[in-house]
Image 1: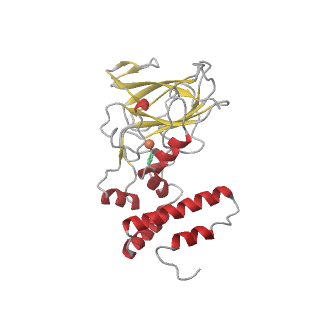
Image 2: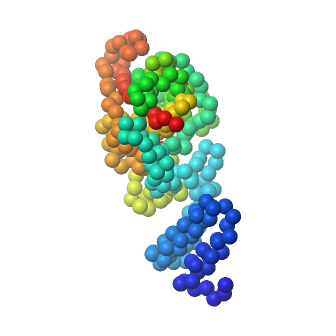
Length: 286
Ligand code: BEZ
Ligand code: FE
């Protein structure tokens, strides 16, 4: 193939992919090339823009580390994570909806007994969470593994505090025989996603803010059921309609009720105001 021009280059590349041995790789590569070329044609990409794009992707890669997943942030802020989540978790309406995973999960977070304080010193007003995990026929799911992680009063996850690897406001719990899971933590606040890198520049350049509405993260796993990766969002948060990563679903918004000082759900006497959150999760069968 010689003398390729703007009209013939796409077919030439597609032809070169014809012998791709793995069928799925072939499908993905062919679609990728078609869409990439169509994009360059649609915007009549200049050489300066092409180079700026290469530099942006290079900077994104160079920003990545063990604790900073800039490419995941890019996928999240472009809505790709939500699209992939949605098309891989089509399920009956009665099931709890899935949403994005995010970059702040930690493997092997400490296991807590039901009722424990998972805050472990995280800053914030006390919040008592009471949840139930059921299957689609209403059956309680005992011994489901429930992980939780959240931001503190300053809008930071524990892993964002450099030089301190204490687990705070995160933990692993297991439901009881009635499928109940409950714990104490702190009130989660809205927070900006990390925006001091290329993704932050992209948000600035497109007139967007980096904020996520307050939420708790909840992956829930139990044998015989599809693992659910989701959030519970705080009703009334001002970012519910403009989440930087497009993760909000109305079925995942719940009231976090403020209480005056007094008796808390765990029987303790609270000298300051505190919050409670109740939520029921419904898992789809395998
Ligand atoms: C999070 O909810 O932790 C998150 C999700 C996507 C991007 C950044 C943070
Ligand atoms: Fe989060």
